[in-house]
Each structure stands twice: as C-alpha cells, then as structure tokens.
Image (cartoon, rainbow, N blue to C red; front, side, top):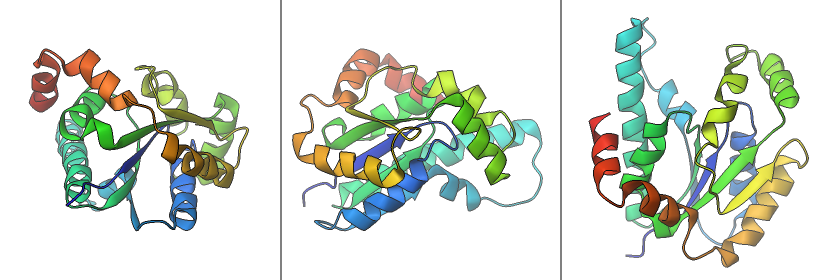
Length: 195
C-alpha cells in the first residue's frame, strides 16, 4: 500500500492554517484527505484544571501522540492535511523523526503581526499576545517547500496555490533537507524522543 501524502501547515496561532485546511478539503478532489489539527487533539483532553508542570507534561504527550497519529494515518495510505504550531524546537525534531520526509509538503503560513493581533482579538478564544509570542519561533528553522501569506491572500487563494504546487513538489523536500541537517547524526532523534 502506498503511503499517503502529508500537507503540513505550520504557522502561529490565528495565522489562518485551519481556514486553509478547510479550503483544501473542499478543492482537493483527486483523493480523500483528512484534516488533523493540533487544536483538535488538545480539545480531546480532559477539562479539569491541571497544575503547570502537569499541564506541560500532558501537552508534550499530546503533541508527541499527534505527530505519531499523523504518521499512522499516512502509513496506511491516507492523505493528511496537518495544522500545527512548531513553536518549540523539539516539536519539529519529533516530526522529522517520525514522519516520512519524502511524503511531506511543508508549507509556511505567514501573517503580519498587526493582522494576527486583530484576528486574535476578534476570535476571543486565545490569550492576547499568543501569536506575537510565537511569531519568531515557528519559522526559525527557515526552510519550506512553499510559503503563503494570509495577510495578502485569502484562505481559498492559499489553498489553490498549494493545490497547484503539489505536482511540482521539490526533491529533496524541505523535510528531507531539515532531517539531514538536524537528525543526520542521530542525536536530534534521540533529543526529540527524550522530550
């Protein structure tokens, strides 16, 4: 069975990843796709209050499980659209360790800071300043197959760019290049597994 393809959207909170993913589900009619969102996984967690250290440990396990769920879905032939915030270095390292790099289209989702702040305020379901805090962290690795700016393009236009780019994916992929850079000696994979 051929593995599924993974369209991996990375950007800050409120950058438009989920909106792009919904549009991709609508326009990618060549194959069946599933939208897997880190927010969706977080929403499945118990709602009881957790102490800070307990919450941190639960969030790390949730994200590690999320990464492995993506890999499992794709490994049995499902095409997956991933919506994630790689705001901590270990998250990228873990994804590089568990996802097949040749099957990942890595898309950077950008949005200007003032627009992020406006969206955050309009949403009302995120702590003020969360996107600003994440802004310099999520794209620090500096390598994508494709980038979209939701401050300049609508979610539909971004989805169309991604759809049109899929047949022209680069070789090696951004995940392949990043994996060679960060996991080549095995230490990065060990660090990711230890966190």
